[in-house]
Image 1 (cartoon, rainbow, N blue to C red):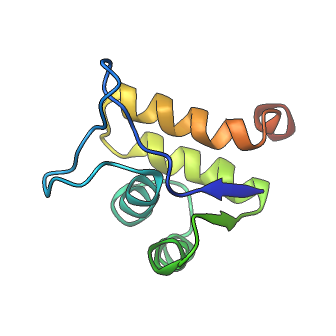
Image 2 (spheres, helix red, strand yellow):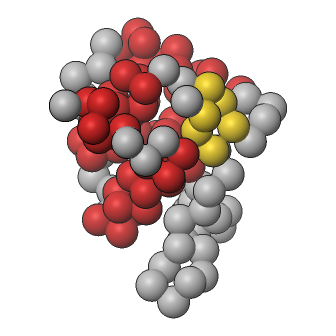
Length: 105
């Protein structure tokens, strides 16, 4: 399934949420940070390899197996993001494949 890495996380007023360096917070940042910093059930080597792949991707989308997207969601949840970040990241992942939750069960 394709994961869009350029989706920007928004504040309640619709303005982009920004990182401490002033860049808009996007899915690429959320994915790489979650995979490298969160304590999730994903194999640490796989998480690191996937984070490097996302970080170095020169495209706006990457292809990921649906099982890895489910693991990615767990890593995002395990990181101490604010609820508005987690909710929008989940929406971005699920909008690409709306029945992700059905297949996970």
